[in-house]
Length: 180
Image 1 (cartoon, rainbow, N blue to C red):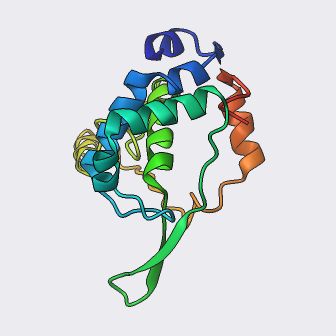
Image 2 (cartoon, rainbow, N blue to C red):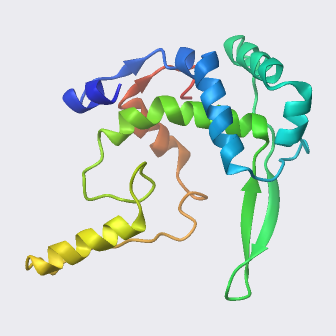
């Protein structure tokens, strides 16, 4: 999908829902979520509970719910964690089930939108990190390019205008079952 998206900037992808509901994709998403650990969501279920229940059985039930279009995300558990300045930062904790579904969606969507990003963007990209950005800035400065643009928008992910975001997604994705 990345190669197609890179080769054809105007190409729109159809039928992504079937990729999100693939058992191998959900199993890979589960493994990624499991490696990140994380606290249980509002349902109290953690990875140990799922493993006691049976991961394959749990994934099969999730696969079926997605395919039958009965899957619905749960509410987010809100906690506040202390910041260095003494203030509290709100943190939303999704259920494991929702994290697995979001990761599966990310696995399907990321290659498409990654192809559209210019190489100088480092934030929130697979295989890129802040240290690489610093090295690139140093290299640009060394080569006589003194202009650097850095933007840090406070609470941007909590305030993204949903209609505009979905218009942007619709430029590349045409599957109302996964992108509405």
